[in-house]
Image 1 (cartoon, rainbow, N blue to C red):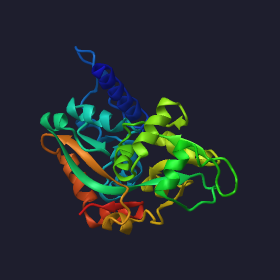
Image 2: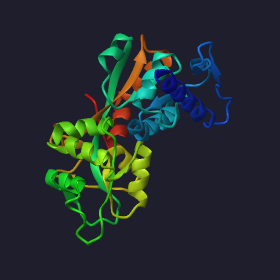
Image 3: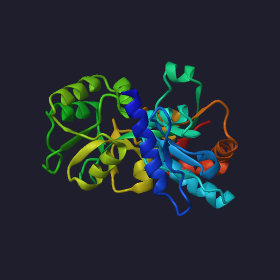
Image 4: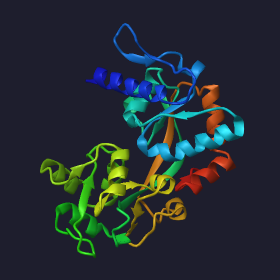
Length: 288
């Protein structure tokens, strides 16, 4: 199973690279163990890949970095946090994108992380929904199927993520009873399951009455989704930074061993005042 996941993550990264830009792309090759890898990725192109949560704000940082330095940084389509860990671990990728902590096993394998932004996890709806706020009680009632209509009497379309989704892991720690409702919903096949960040965001933009969770940067950068306050608290950068809005996810870079020169230069920009301003302007909170 691990071998299958490794091949899948590397192939996804390879396909994403092929679709970027007009320069010759590094091609996936198969080594003697059958694992697909990108040949000489550092010497040819500087590519970032990983969690879908990281992509909107990292794309903005990459655009600004190229404008300032002339050095292109390509942000590939999502391969997930697990995909980033595997790609960095086997040398396919020098700098990955994570939206979850490393496990002890991953740390012992020599992987390291550097945080660069906080984003708010938001309960969100299609723009046509009249509500502007939900309480924890509302959230649980909606997932139990007890609250089925919005204020305009239109049906609520509930969208959920899996038990191991990184945002759900944070929400479980803040909303008593939420883990049970998600588990029950999955076992009973009660609601539509969105397996990727982009699937959830697309559904919230296009399906009337939809309700699910996404993040502040997805909404700010790409638009078309309405964020709800939770218990009357808005998911603003100030509220995230002070802890007033507690539903927050930390975005990190993951690498192995020492940072490559390319990675260090990009991270220095991200942590500069210019990088911090980009993070704030696009729905995140810069790390101290």
